Length: 411
Ligand code: HGY
Ligand code: MN
Ligand code: MN
Image 1 (cartoon, rainbow, N blue to C red):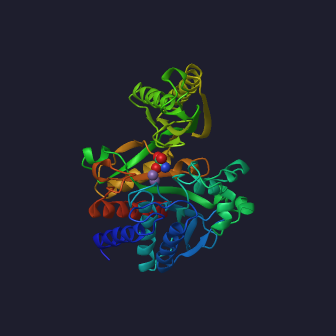
Image 2 (image 1 turned 90 degrees about the vertical axis):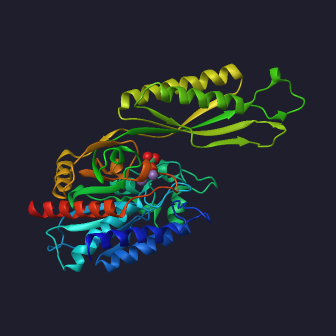
């Protein structure tokens, strides 16, 4: 199979997985849903065809294992995630999983065994769409899931622990999903860039040097519902107006630092009738910055703004912390190897930070991590218009082949 044929097949598989969705007419694949299960079954089939043993761990991560020459050899991990945001594109997370399968397929076709194992992982929840807390799959591998996380609830009041059970996992055996760092040589996560830098430099791939840190919070504003026709403006405790002022204040903080981004992605108004003054609003905050100190300073500034706006408007504005994760440097040694592999494939190894979060963040304390970015058109992502080019996917797979080859040389 030529490099181009391999890339074409990989893209066709992205299309095949795109039909598995929780919502008709668009791609939405949350943790523990039938759509995620169907996507896992399809990937498991491709993993088996590539000569891998396939299993699901205690939280439902799908893991393919291509044995090495020696039993009990350490493993090199390649992967991504199969879950998605709402109305997603078809490459975010998926590309990493299928690129890992493509590398193993080529080894299997050549009947090659390496001095180490290659494992391909498809994490079951990176986006946090259902439980609003990200990296649930990779945190299980890292052993950093705790009881509190298991009791997170989705919008229907189902806990993460119950969802694990319903998905065929075992919440009581979470500890068993934790992997020993000694089992691994490292982890590389191929992923679409989700930004414009590679396209601006006309590069097919890039090497990630750091992944930004982030803060996720939920803010509730409780005012007083009332009759739109009989309550004077002076007597209102309008939750929506207070929340709207807060949204613009969040935007202002985001704009205050060119490296900062601040997003309100969800905004729910209750009771939600045109002739009722809104009594309650729930909104989400996603705050990111390459450096932790400015992000935490901005977070404190916003906490104070929530309190100030609430007091001034006579509403109860409450900050609920969901998750904070520090900015993460990719492993210098493995990243240098990845950059060398990019050079081997005839591409300038441009290094760049990731504004998006990735499972590599959750694994960085467990094992050396590196990330390979693939150019995506217009940098568009978390959007059905997400797209990549076959030739760039071919380059990415070749870079992974070269990285694996380099690791073989160093064994
Ligand atoms: O939100 C992110 O950066 C990633 O897509 N989970
Ligand atoms: Mn994403
Ligand atoms: Mn992703």
